[in-house]
Image (cartoon, rainbow, N blue to C red; front, side, top):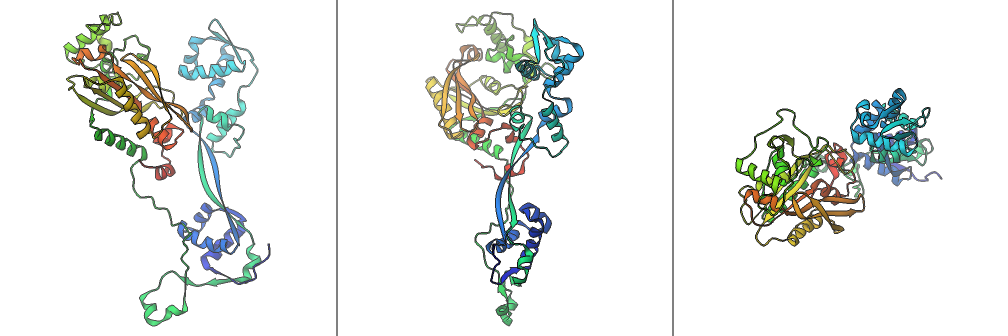
Length: 496
């Protein structure tokens, strides 16, 4: 490129910045900020002199940084689950399937994932519940393990060949980092003789105007293209703001807020909702049980007695019940609230007719954490009772959640089953970023749920994963982002 023919007038600061860029040949704007200790607004002002005189170029780039999450750090410390299984099999030759999880020290879901991977690649054989190695000398995912350990040690490592599998197995998270790269077009030595150091001021003082010295100074040009420094004032966490917005909408529609405890009796969490005591959802793998105290106090005897009759013979609901001996000891066990419907069950006691209630309830389940599941989450719960209420009214409320709250018109209803509602329906959307997303379920409470509490009118009920509503509305692909400590997201995420 030819040398400039005219004199180039540059502020002192711009010349110093030019020298730094020329020395490095190529440098990020964040590194310049660190070296010069200038705020972004001033730095952009001085860089504009260099760019406009074609001394440097600037290029916006987006880099993707990959980092381990908890599951990845665990795999780095304990080894990938498939490698741990192979190590145990090498030591024991053959192991019964039922004993494997205990030997490895993992839960059944993690073990099943490892077994599936090994079986898919023909590393193991399973015959009559006994697992043996099919390839005793083979190494399983050694390169992947090495990559994870290098990431854990904060070493520089090329993960491009492994990014897809690392993300698929929920071992890492991918962060998008935006930056600007500055590069010299002409070296400082080539043009330093043509550079004139300018003395500019940004404002006039009263003295300069009185004594006339303003005529001898040069005012800095006001550049409308330079971005001012970013200012991040105080704001509410975006997801917390969204929850407040949903509450305001429901209150505006005439709903009253209902509340219930986080530590709940199985009576309200399951029994009052006509969920049998031998139902699989009541196992330790699907609910958090409280260790101390293990049991609480059941409500009034008349409610307990009627719920017991419903379970054993159907009471006067026209149902035959579950036809087993109902246990008050099981019903008194304490759990962390597994769904917001327990709050609805409590509200059925002395329920006014007509009335409509809602709650946004914190719930807890021992789910495997992934892009759409957390072990604790929020649920938007509601009930409406009125002699004239119908299933069509329920579909209208669900449509409001999909269209007005999640801002998605690509929603569908599917028939579903719940022990406590009939008919039942599932609300789902097909999101372009996530794919199919189930928002939750709804239906009309069965007589087995309402009659023990003296409610004779129809009661429509719904329970929706409000975390997922927020994800769809804001195009978030990983539910863990809602509770992220990432300042960039907290500062820039849209507020509802």
